[in-house]
Length: 544
Figure 1 (cartoon, rainbow, N blue to C red):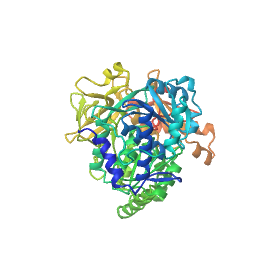
Figure 2: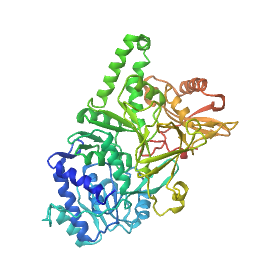
Figure 3: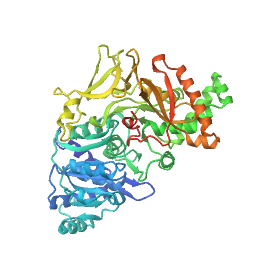
Figure 4: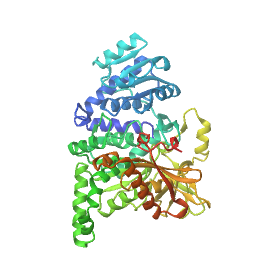
């Protein structure tokens, strides 16, 4: 990769699409590419005059917004390192990230900054509002005055030739601290080549064009949303609408209806909730079940359900890409049966994020897509096509390592460049990946059989009155922790004692589908929803 190719992607896009809408806050302001470029130039001028140098760390702490996007591009193209901080982190975790990352400058949403304690982040000398670019805190009054002067539109030198960084492929550009499933995670060092590789792959395989619309609701502080709802669309001149509030399924579907996006990215939790609330009740009606058994009529019903589902997502998209976790097999099977245009991809923060993807028209059922063409794959087993083993990858997308944590880096990244993903799976001769679970989650049966809790949980989640669950091992027996569907329980006036009996019925039902060594011994109800990561994966380690 040649120097500056990553930055050139955005320079060319902003020039060619100068008059097109670039960023909108949902039900708020809209900026063109030309207007966004002007703000980026202003930030560059401030960084340059205030002594910010290439490689300095600048943190972003806020929900998705136009200002978040502009700040990210300004930091990246200046040559500083972006430290995105998830808005769902508690203040102590945020303090730790800001200190550990050695961040010097902070962009923060007003309401989130109010929860922080400046004494606990002494190296942060300047804080700027992501809400309106006001100066929230500057230890140097001259720099505060300079920031306000520049952002109010002071005349800039060479306005059409902003200072752009001279970046090399191995240069660090992002340190991503994500909330994972094994405790407080490490800072993933993502280099220029990883971002560039991911964006170019998307340009080559996902047909977005200038002016196409995208709704950004996945957290941009996580690389899945960052790459495919922001950086890739911005690199081709799309109009991106950012959901600036917590993205509930209701808000998301309302935004889809209004914006009518051309490409949709999602995590399984959102899709499964829509399926369970909008589709499953229809399928369980006795008349519908009977009609679905009649060949001619079943096809008609499938077309009607598919159209209803497509309209739920705005009715204008060419594909829905699901990533971040496994999709419930029942939901996937039904979507394929009705020919719904969805596909499942696979990745991880350490690959910035993409490992595998394939178009909905050509992907293989039950797979997580096909290995992307800039990566190598191997399965750590004697028979990769039949025997489950750890998925290992190598290539342009792979991280540099974990920031200031060489020991953790050595555990997953070998000197030969192979990254151990921690995921278990198999592959086929065409390099499609079939994921079976997380290696850390796998349990052993009484005779050494491999038990994948995710597969049992998928079956349980399809049963009545179960909202979500976690299967754990207690005294060498499998126990299902279940958070019940409170809405259904209330609407159907089901008491607590009756609910316990219904859960026992569910336990008997699911055990009929499971081998003897994977039988559920007990269902235990929990009072509150399980704590989740920003990707909406349950923080399993808290319950095991």
